[in-house]
Image 1 (cartoon, one colour):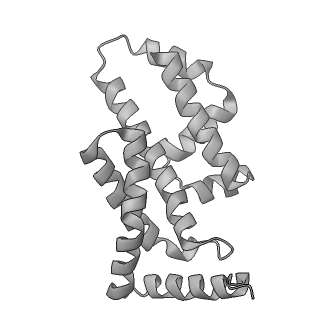
Image 2 (cartoon, rainbow, N blue to C red; image 1 turned 180 degrees about the horizontal axis):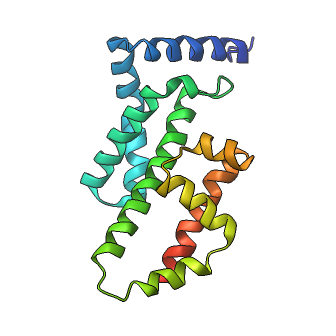
Length: 167
């Protein structure tokens, strides 16, 4: 006899957790934190290699994940939602770090204008929406009429390209 839960069971369980998180039930929030935080921290640390930075990103991930849990796709496991939030938080942190380095750099500002102008129009568009207008992934996807996965990929690729151009 197969003891694997059906997708309906998983969906019902996930829906229950999402509902409890949305109501900010402290017991459920603690369970989510205890279950997900170590795994998420490991993923963050593998990227940043800096404990303090990893903790900061983890905190932002958990706060955003809980605050916007109503945006969770019911076809995904709850952990997958937090991983998606985590990936976006890592991108935001990288962009902020890059912006800080640009501001601290004493090179001629035209150097950055040249780098910015070398980006493609879609790269500029997605970076402007994400980092200058403060739009989230889903907002960007709606504005550009792209799937959210494409938005994530384009933001990541544009940041890497911009970093390479200005370095």
